[in-house]
Image (tube, rainbow, N blue to C red; front, side, top):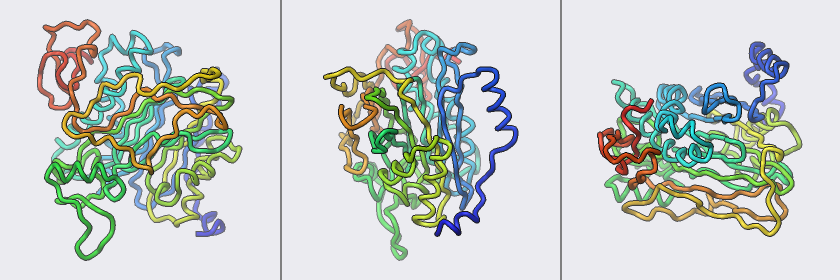
Length: 402
C-alpha cells in the first residue's frame, strides 16, 4: 500500500473532550506520569487498548502514582478482549493484599509479578464461566512505576524497549506465544498431550489441536481445552539513564507481522513525540504489508529525568528476585528472536537492569512473604485453583483482602 493510498484512510480523530481534558489537566498542574501516543487501523475491529496514566496505589497520594498500558487482540469475536480490558487490571490489584499495596513501593513492586499471574488466571476463569462465550484474546499489560517497568503477556502482542537517543532495541520485554516460532511452547503443548500441526490441506502456521489456534497462551478460548493457558510471561526491569531515556513500543501482531523489532524502533525514533511515533509505526506497518489485520500501537516515553543515572563502572544485576520457578519442565531457553540485550554501558542512552523474568506455566509455591503478617493460622484463597489453603501454597491472598 502506497503512502498516497494510506492517506485516504482516515484514522480515528482525537475527540474534543479528550483535548479539553488534556488542556484542563495542564492548567491545573495535574502531572501525567508518562507521555504516550496511540494509533490504530481496524480491519476486523478486534483490537482494544487500555491506557491509565494517573493511577495511585494510595488514593489521592501522587507519590504512589503509576501508569498502565495494555493491548488486547481478540479472535473469534470481541467479547474476551472487551472483558479483559474492563477486568484484568482490577483482578491484578485485588491479588495484592491492601497492606502491601499501601506499605511501600518496594513491597508493591516485589508483589506485582505474581499478582499479574493471579490476575490473568482470575480473568480467564471468570470469562470462561460466562455461558456461551468462546472467543479469546491476547493480552499485553505494562505497568510503569517511575524507573521500573513490569510487563505480563500472553499471545503474540509484543512490547519492546528502545533507546530514544540511538533508536536501537534495548530489550524485548515479552515472549511471543506463537507455536510457529516458539519451540518451547510446542514442546510444552505436546508434552501435555496436545497435537501441533498445520491444516491438512490449507497449510498455514502451526496450530494446536483440537481447536486449531496458532497461539499456545491466551485469555478465554473455552472451547480449545487445557493446552491453551492464561499464565503470562512476566518480566520486570529497572531502567538506568546512560545519557538518555527509553521509549516503549506496545503493539498487536498487525505491526509485528509487518515490521521487525529494529524496523519498529527506527520508525518510532525519528525525533518526534510519542503521539506521532505511534502513528509512524502503524503507517510503516501498513505501507509494508497492507492493512491485512487490526494494527494497533501504543508508544510510551520514559524520559531520562525520571531515571536514576547509571554509575561509572557499574554492572547490571540479573534477577534480583524471582519467585516463579519451573516445577516440572525446564522450558527456559531463550530464542534468538526474543533475546534481550542486557545493560551495555556504551553507545546506548538507557540501560536495563533485570529484576524478574519468568514464563513457566508450572508454578511452584511462593512462600509466606505474600502476607506481611506471616500468620500461619490465616486461611488463604489460591488465585490459580481457587481452593482455600494455608500460606505458602499456590498463588494466594487472604480471604478477607479486597
